[in-house]
Image 1 (spheres, rainbow, N blue to C red):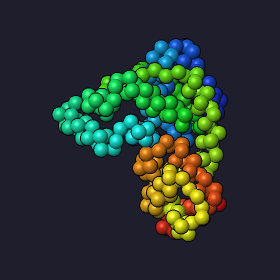
Image 2 (image 1 turned 90 degrees about the vertical axis):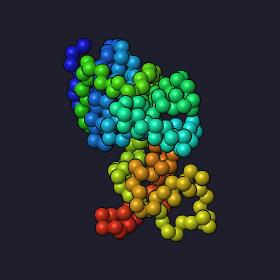
Image 3 (image 1 turned 60 degrees about the horizontal axis):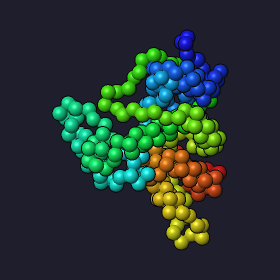
Length: 249
């Protein structure tokens, strides 16, 4: 297979991923979009590892969000990880959780696959940028690898692209800071779900969207959809550089 590189404007990301998978290639596909950058590692055409360079979601956060582990347990595993690192050993959080009995090896593989899929979903929303495939398999030795079904991932990603496109139209920068409208309170006639109240409480004018995503312990897309709805209803304001609040409609 000749060198595979080009612009996203000329070849869709889904097409590029499918070409690598169908050719059963081993190597690393690096995609650099405007908002997302990702490296996807393939072994014999199967995606076995992915690293979202700009917005990588930690496995521990995924596990807490999915109710697999409690935050206290994840923090204990992180402390063990730091201790091992201090002794010169690089061990991933998932491996430590297996050793603690929190996860089985099969469950860990499933969660790592979920992490890979979510990274691919995010990059598929990019409409401009570059891609390049190299034969080197750039997986850190301490990382967990697994295999995912590319066809199913592409289909699901295509469905989600339209949702992400609308969301990024309203939330172009996840480093922006938002604050909820002071007129909306627990006594308000507006009926919100528990998750919506959670997100609203985190939009305090100090935390960025990325901070809210990390603290909410919900799916990234779900968090952004909730904030998107708040923006559409005029219930939140974006803080400007001078500290003032800007009504978004």
